[in-house]
Length: 361
Image (tube, rainbow, N blue to C red; front, side, top):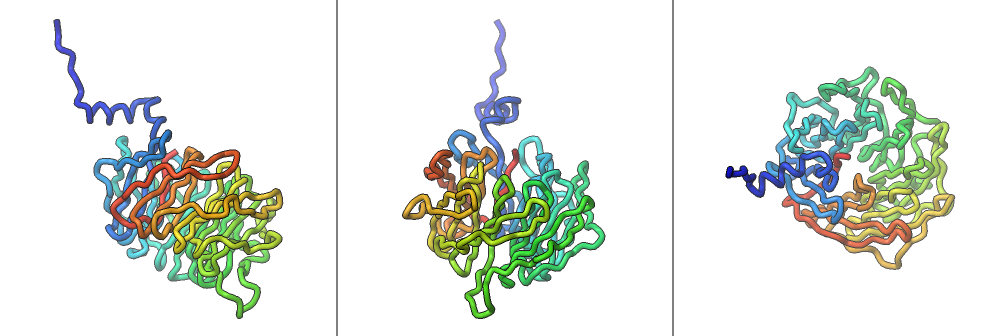
């Protein structure tokens, strides 16, 4: 007879998370929480959408972290620190925890959002206080950032959000106080060349109500680009020229959403578009036709926590994750792939106000 060693339950569960095949039932999401200068980390159940906090979370970083992006290699996390005017690099540990690599990389004034090309070669940063976009090359081994020659690039007034098209060819910037969208092609070395016709104006005259573009989403097929207009409570839609990246307004745009739309996300196929509304505390769901014209799926919005500030499609492409700034929480909704309708699954308190989310594949 011999005694078989028995692992403690907590240790066994931790081991199962890391074993090949077992980890496929969960993935890890990282969330910026600027009020405590932290990055919260959660394991997301791929079957239920429930978020469970990771030991050691939140991980401390720079001053007032506002935006986050995970590198495609799943080795590095980058965070824009709005109060520190710099970028933090974190290495992802085997336990999915984060360790910051110092020193931080200087940005310009008030970095507000981050985007990365699909290959993970370049990091793009909007600097809302200095009205420009910084471009950094990424060392694939260390994750270190190096600002490219020619950076930063001038954009409109108060750039608040940046995104890269799925193909990695184009970059678009929402200029909140300028009521415009700046558009660029991305060169092989990360250089930006403004597209003819850019910036695209979201109001027809100086006397029109300010739109306040706050967020940009591009469908997976790169046919359509939509903008959440925070101040005018509507969304603007554009078609994208696949060769040049130029934008053409969708017929009938802008389209009414809820009150103060703060962000938006396409569903997995691009057939459906979801808009989070900051002050009416709900998600407006749309179906898009072949020309990009949206029609509301339901007569009423789906309720969220207080002041939803972002909405993202989960990496499993089956859930929407909604960060509620006033509710200090993340809401999880499943997507009906046929009808586009949503089902609320879980609301997870994260203890502080969230501003952005990015996840491991």
